[in-house]
Amino acid sequence: MNSTFRFLSLLLFLLISTQIAFATEPAEVLARKALSENAAASSAAIEELRSLGPAGLQALMVQYAEQINARIANPSAAPSEEWQRISAALDAVAQQRNSYIAGLYWYTDLNEAKKASKALGKPILSLRLLGKLTEEFSCANSRFFRTVLYPNEAVSTVLHDRFVLHWQSVRPAPKVTIDFGDGRKLERTLTGNSIHYILDSDARPLDALPGLYGPRAFVRGLLNAESLFKSLAGKTAAQRSFFLRGYYDDQHNKISAAWTSDIEKIGGTVPRGFKVVKSSDGDALSIAPLAVT
Image (cartoon, rainbow, N blue to C red; front, side, top):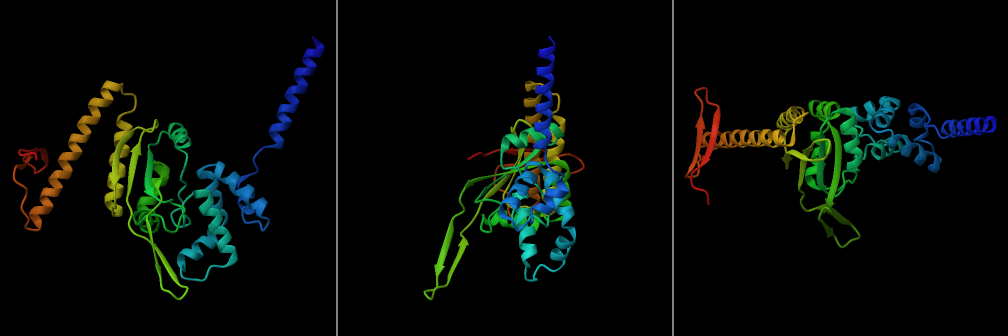
């Protein structure tokens, strides 16, 4: 009996010692090590910070806030060696090129995003794009997102506070190379396409924002989708299906009514058979395509 107790005590001691030995260093320590000139030490620290999720990126943002603010204030300045290391560490942890502006953490593993969504009670915003969000020449849409849309204060706040972010490359972005014949070459992407899916915690699609959006419209779409996500909490499969049908019908009506209003404003003609039923206060009640092709 005593020998068994001693064995178990020793085993417990070894387990605790092992956990301590492999315990993750504080995030602020890792943030400093991420810029080490020792490539192996830097890579290991960046990997650890990445594994910490958004907290790992936040540690880097706080540690190098002064340099980040200076870069934002003077983006055309020649990048120093220190800034190049800071930027590379930020992008590797965030998994987004030029991440220092918006400070957003992106999952690239959907299963990890699902775990975070369930733990935090937040919907998943899943970007599907051509190329990768870490590349300079990902598709044109995604370059717009990371340079104009995501850095917008209202957009970045909603994304950071209300969503779990995930991106997935559908295929490489198509590129064209122009050879000037004198050793110079110009390489650019031809086009691009993208869509932001709003998913629940089981990665089931709830809504989608395809293509390009301005900040105000993008935030409006995000908040509508977040409300939908919250409204579905605790509902049975049948209730969920019924609720979603009503939501999609309502969204279709609103979009069609707005489209009709825009056509009328520019003096265009609404297609034959297209009818908008409105309430007394002007809200669209239903859209009736009377002549479906």
